[in-house]
Each structure stands twice: as C-alpha cells, then as structure tokens.
Length: 83
Image (cartoon, rainbow, N blue to C red):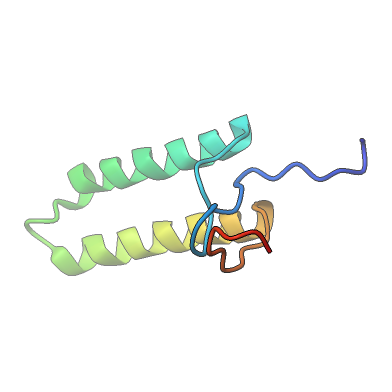
C-alpha cells in the first residue's frame, strides 16, 4: 500500500475536472485560495479597479488549477455510465 498515490483532489464523478479535496493538504490549498480571494476584495477594492481585481483572481485561480493538475487525480470526461 505504500506505493499507492494519494490524490489531494479526486476526479469528479460526472463531467471533467476535480471534486472537493479529500486530504488535509487539499483542504489547506482550497482554504488559502478562498482566504486570498476574500483578502483581495478588501485590498484591491473591485468597485475601484475591476481590471486589477480580475487579474488577481485569474492569477489565483490559475495557481489553484495548477495544484489540482499536479496533485489531483488525472481528469477525464466521465458520463456516469460504467466504462
């Protein structure tokens, strides 16, 4: 069992992508993403500067997707039918 890889983010049951994290590391990454995004709303004030906030949110989301890609189960399309 030591050779078995533990994914932080499992693949979704239907569709393409990842589901809710199943390890503490995944929860920590998701929590940091939410906290940094919430902090960015106070720091960048989206009402004053839409472009700056959108760039910030896009950058954070790109980082989250990178972590999901590296530490998550390999994504593939799942229709819910048994393959």
